Image (cartoon, rainbow, N blue to C red; front, side, top):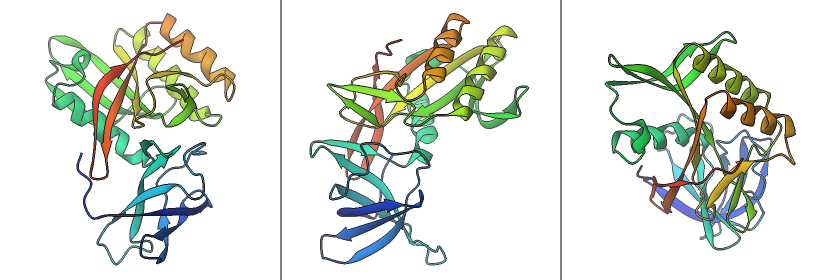
Length: 234
């Protein structure tokens, strides 16, 4: 995934969940859209180097959107959670995610389940069971190569796990895919210290037949793409 019209600066602060103040390298200060509803723990430290994208749409209240951040002055992370589904789809279509190949069609945001959900990606083929793929974005870096999910208590994430387990019970294939756009993360595990109920439910889902995989990314100032599978520790 290419990132065009990028500007570099420093984070002043992130606030009200959807806003951030940025100082560009030329000294100009901007308020930009922050496309991340999570806590962004360890990814929103004031003074961090950041990259923002110029949408070119003057009708938007905030023309610029925050895309990348430098973590601990050595790693890059994509904080735009809206990119995760696109990154995974791109990786499937390019053959990077080998376990999700050989399906005839790929559909997005399909309604399903007893709890009124939408699956991120639905892979279908007339010769195979449907494959429901739920994508979760992982940027919480705990140190020593470890990334964890979630970065805050997630009732929505728990609902998605229940829906995936139900799909397996109906004879379908269900996959929870951790999209990891953070160059410091080498392995992923549930954040039991943040949301122990989610961690317990995730392990129940695996025992019920839900597949859990993770893919890490190559990130530069103008491109993000998934490139390699990462171990998931349960």
